[in-house]
Image 1 (cartoon, rainbow, N blue to C red):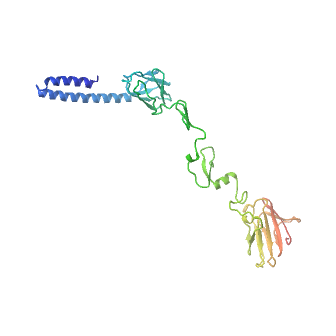
Image 2: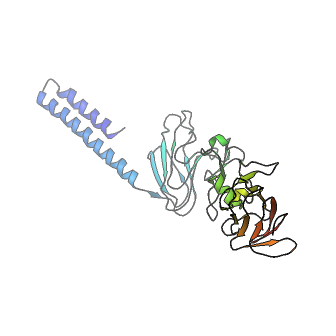
Image 3: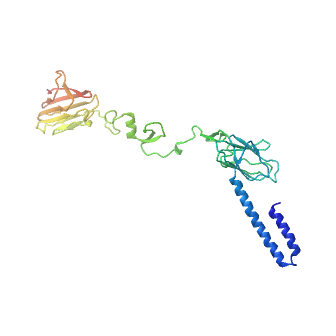
Amino acid sequence: MSLSSFLTGVVDTFTSLVNGIHYPLAEYLNKYQDAIIDIENVVLKNALSNHFKNVQVLSADKTLTDYDFVIQRLDCNGANRVVKVPVGDAVENHPFWIVNSSGGAYTITVKSNDAVDTLGTITQGSAGLFLPDGNGEYLPSSSGGAGITDGDKGDITVSGSGATWIIDNATVTLAKMANMATASLLGRNTAGSGVPEELSAATVRTLLGLVIGINVQAYDAQLFSNLPQNSKSANYTLVLTDSGKHVLHPSADTTARTFTIPSNASVPFPIGTVITFVNQNAAGVLTVAITTDTQRLAGAGTTGNRTLAANGIGTWLKINATEWICSGPGLT
């Protein structure tokens, strides 16, 4: 019986005796009863508050009874502990809120006091609520890190008494991954190991050391089955896209012109590049010059600028990074 129930019974007894005999006394007793209830509420509130603040330091495993507080703040004190809850009394059992307030990474394993059932494991800084099932037993807790037993949960395997969670192989689908931009790949460009990154096509080409027009064709490059023409009626310096073409000096331009092969440092034509120069009938004299690299006339082996007369045709082949060899009728 609680203090409030006892005092209320006493007050009720005295009130019935004096009721109708001495009204002021009855009124006084009623007011006294209210004061007693208020005092008890304050005392109870302070007791619960102090109990919740206070941590019980364990020196061994602990067995709870129906007379223990609902709130149990426990410090494992340097070892994993077992806390047992009472079983066998379906009427008196009450819930337990067990808090692991240990200063280290120690666990509290909650069992029934007959050691038949393991109801949960509470890790440091976690708590578990254990409820009676109405049949003299307690239900396993699933709160605050407690009650997660080891084993495969479908897509996740739990081990280490609930401390380690590992996603099973082949369970993360593409739909569960982060969205990616169009025309991008998953990889890593940042130095050192780390999380995967979203890479653009340009970044992937750089990682693979591929330069469009040198190591690989552009995705929209035209693959020629003939020898495309680039007609020029003015002095002209070759560009990378002239590779595999013939550069024509047409009949309509009777003025002498100079077509220049740029240095490898300026325009790095791949080794094996072939370019043909054609000086059409009646066109002015065509000089094929080179900046800082070498062009060598096949057969004679002479170097320097080459002259291509009208109706002449000459083919240039790049044989190393800075040297071309050329030959053809009308070429001197």
